[in-house]
Length: 224
Image (tube, rainbow, N blue to C red; front, top):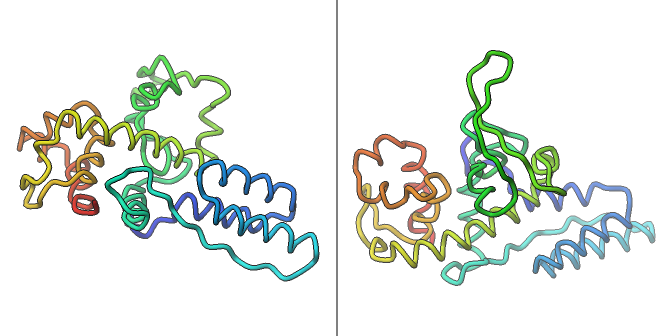
């Protein structure tokens, strides 16, 4: 399944909420969404909870993304989020990437969510990456909560946006891999390469070597 066909984590969260039988829990989730800035979606969930309490038929709620990046409209941000979904909610790779957005454990460390990122060998198998999660966050909680993964993704992308504009603004507009570089493409590269963005920009060999990173750029540059 390609990235554009994968379900959106926020859409999944709302659908799961709509399927609940507990109106109080639905209302609580509405409060969470409102706190994140999704007032319209929160209103739909509260309406659904009210209808459940009154015994009226269910109605399905649409979800609207609010872009956290000034350069992206809500529609552009929603498209970018879809294109950046390359894993499953509960996925953990041997190279230390987790969840829908395949966020690196090193990035979670940068964001202050884990510590002691390291490679370990279990049961004689190949070494893999692990980390110590800072309470109350746990790996199990992260891998079971698509909305939490999305919230972490938003924080990460906002920081990458600031870093790209501070350090690599001159790359925007240049042709890279046959396409003009835009902010969306460069922060997508940052998601995969982290601080190695500068090396990726400067080295054609790196762009050929790190094919997944370059593919992410190709999918997302030009979105905003």
